[in-house]
Image 1 (tube, rainbow, N blue to C red):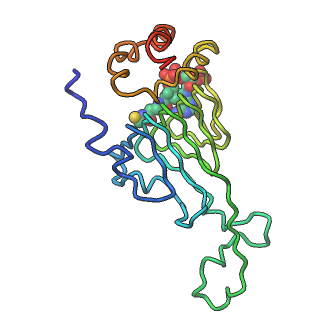
Image 2 (image 1 turned 180 degrees about the vertical axis):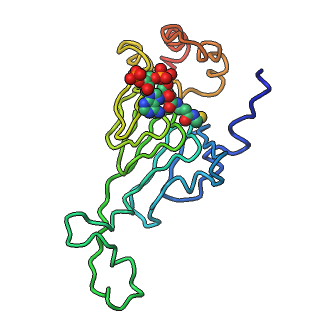
Length: 211
Ligand SMILES: CC(C)(COP(=O)(O)OP(=O)(O)OC[C@H]1O[C@@H](n2cnc3c(N)ncnc32)[C@H](O)[C@@H]1OP(=O)(O)O)[C@@H](O)C(=O)NCCC(=O)NCCS
């Protein structure tokens, strides 16, 4: 059974794929673009190349499902409070549009925490912050920030439940296993791949906490 699955990396973590200066990614996070035929760079929509533009920041150990999309503020040449939402400014080749004002309005960085699993074809709106350990359901439309270890789904996305109780979430956020060096992850891997949060916390307390 184990050999049925190919490695989701397919040789390409986000660190290896990302070419855009406004996308920042942590270690081992990967994009599984099997069914959408593009790399992670194209998941970030309307990302501006300019220095100081909103960035897409993705933590470590994130699993990003095929066709997920991050809508960046670059699409906000459309201003709903103006007379027209038409992006005149971005079509300077049309003489009639000369004098149009730039409707771009920054939304702030989009920040995806560590160990976040984003389901296939989920959409994350501009400036959203998703907490560590969260799960975003398939085809969720995320319009509000997501708390650590929350599972959200739907349109607009709502919390379905938390992955762990409050005490365990506190322990996970305290020990931040995603920052551990690989040799500690290797030793802790049997616990990492179990439900034993207190056991992992015990390992951390005995071996890493004070180093
Ligand atoms: C969100 C998700 C993780 C929830 O899994 P789960 O905890 O096993 O959830 P359940 O199937 O027990 O459903 C719990 C509730 O959430 C709802 N729900 C599940 N997935 C949902 C989704 N994507 N959007 C909206 N609601 C969803 C269910 O309808 C159910 O609601 P109810 O309690 O009112 O009946 C899962 O459904 C999902 O979307 N996984 C992503 C899969 C994916 O995209 N994989 C490809 C990338 S690797």
